[in-house]
Length: 247
Image (cartoon, rainbow, N blue to C red; front, top):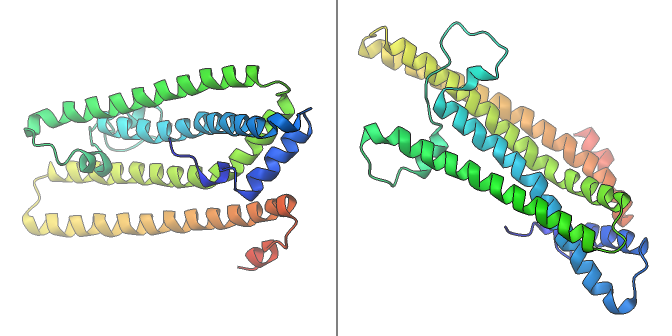
């Protein structure tokens, strides 16, 4: 897994986190750089432990859509059935290069998504085991150090978390659109009616997509403004927080 820029040893905010952490531990000059590297590895493992569940949530949403399981955890009541098996375009696109009979596609999607979710779960378990091992072997690792790293990671993962939630909402919305289309087709509309209905659905989807993107952009702006304010504590530089508030 690629190291994110905010966990690179030359990233200034991360450097300050490392200095704050190591200053609370009795560290000899000779092994300072080694301890710094160890802390980076611990932070990377913690990052994976936080990152993987975010993607698990996305892929489980793909699974529920493809298996017609959205109704299992939904408290809302719909006037149409929610057990249609509709695989999101993302999954269909990933596997579009495979030449396979139409009747075998469902099983192909099931196997692919199931295996990917299983792989993510295994990576999560492995990362948790490695994290426990590394923190036990790191002399002086305390709850306060863990909380400091967690806070730093949460700030940097917030944008991605919002982005994934945005994608999940669009998957849900697209699923409803596709279900309505399928039900409509069961009424045997003529070609003109199909054309009009398709255009209406597309317009509605685009409208919802734009609305979701606007919400997402606003959330991102609020996040970056608040994060910029917190960065002032890291580098002591003039913050643009007030400028953000005025936007």
